[in-house]
Image (tube, rainbow, N blue to C red; front, side):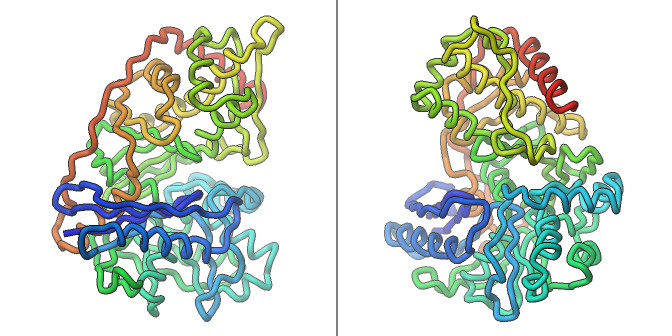
Length: 469
C-alpha cells in the first residue's frame, strides 16, 4: 500500500510517496513557497498541488492515504465563504509581541502556562489574532473561522467540506487550547478578539480518518488528521523515552516525548501535545541554520567553507561569542533583538574565529534548550541531530561537547513528510498504534572539544551583559 506524506514548511512543500509496509520512500517532489512572514495561503495550495501531482506521477501505484504536516502557529483567518480575510501571519512574524505582553499582563504567566501549556510570545496564533483585532478591526469583523496551515491544506484536499478539523498536536500551539483537558478554550480566543467568536476546527484523535481526498490523482484516498511539523518529525523519527531531537532548520527546535503535560511559567518550554496522544515539550528559537548561512555569506564562502574555517579555529574562538539573534528571538523572548558579537579584538578578528563563534553561538542556544527540556523532568539520554545545518562537519564536531550527551545523526531525510506519511498509514489501517518503520541509519558524532564549559560560560555572560537575562 502506498501513502502520501506532505510537509508544508515555511520555505516549500515536500511530498513523499511511501510504502506503508516498511516506510521506504518510492517517489518524492518539492515546490517552493514565497518568502516573507505573511503569505497568501493560496500559494501553499498551489505548491501542494504541484508537488503532489509530480510525486503521484512518479509513484508505482495508487495512493491510499494522505496526511499533512504543516508549519505551526500560522494564522489562517477565513470569512463566511471560506476565503482568507488577509494574508496568513506565519510563526516567524513578530509584530504581535506587544499583544503577547498584554495577554501575560492580563492573566499572568503562571495561569496561562497552567491553562494552555504556553506563555504567549509573538509566534503563537492567539497573539496574531489579538494583533488583527487591534490593528485591522475591519478584517477581524469578517473572521468566520480560524485554521492553522495544516488544517487549511487538509481542508483543501477534501474539497473544503463544511466542517474543518485539526489534531491535538497543532492545536496545542495556538494559545487557546488545553493540553491537560484536550479541549479548546474558546473564552481565551474570544477575549483576544474583542468578544468575537470565530468557529474552531473539530479536534481529532491522531489516528482518525478525517475525510476522503477530492484532489485529482488521489481521489478517494483517506485523509489523516495531520499535525504540526515538529510533531510530524517526532512521529517520523519514532522517538523513544530518553531521545531528544535538536532540529536545525530555518528555526531551531528541541523536543522530547513525554507522558505528562508540562507547564513552564518561564515560557521557555512550550507544553505541546504530540501526534500519538502523548506530549511533546519543546523549545523553539527563531535562528538556527540561517546563522550559518548568513555568516558564510558575509565571509564570502559556502556552508562547507564555513565549516572548514570554524574547525581551523580553536574552541572558544579566541574569546569571541556570538548571540545569534539575527531575526529577533523567541527563546529567549527577545522579538526586537539583533545579533551581537562580543569579545572582539584586533588579535581575534579573523574569518576562522568568526566562523567558529557562529557555530558555537547557534549550538549554545540549543544547549540551553536541552537544559530547559531536562528541567521539565524529561530524560535526556541522547540527542538526535537533524535539519540542514546538522550536515555541517563543524556542527557535528562541536555539538557533543556543548550538549554534554551522546549525539546521533540520522541519515538526512524529510522526517516531517515521513511522519505525515506514517500518520496517513495509521489512519487508513485503523490500528491502535502507528506503524513501526525503521529510521534511516544513524551514526554517532564524535567531538574532540574539551572546552565546552568555557564556551557556554562566555555565551551566558554575553547574554546577561547585553540583554540582562
